Amino acid sequence: MSVDPVGRAFIDRSRAFLTSEYLPKIRSCLDELPKSDLWWRPNAQSNSVGNLLLHLSGNVRQWIVSGVGGEPDTRERHAEFEAEGGRDREELLGLLERTVRDADRVLAGLDPDRLLEPLVIQGTDTSVLAAIYHVVEHFGMHTGQIAYVTKLRTGTDLRFYEVEDGVARPKW
Image: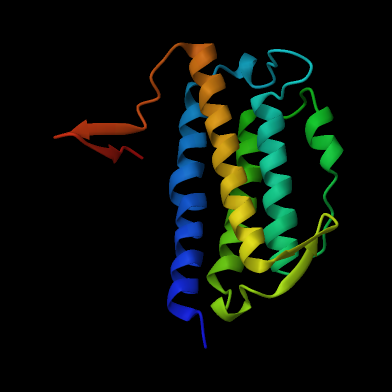
């Protein structure tokens, strides 16, 4: 039995989360965050927004573009966390946007019948479905961290939503 209707809905919603919800929120944060705060860390055990942008790009590329899409895996995960500067927000945002665009291309062409196909990514036995689910959840978590750091450093309301008649509607 084909998983096509449910599988297609899962793939389409995953694409929407990455391209139409999380990425616009990150763009909005970067518009508000002072350039001097891009590489700010509250302590040595935490990551800066710059680190999180590198990390999201690496994770999405490794799990979706390489893992699901079959392109070569060239990720250097440790470098995502060791970086302490050197790239500005335009370069980092451009990297993330290209990566999300590449992942969206892979997902747009994905046959829902592949969702249960086994994969090994980062030495972990997984499936296509689990890889996508991991990336969407992971991206959402770090989007929230970027929003938190932006609010912490700027003291501003990021205005992601407009509430009208008790209903929150996205403003992006």
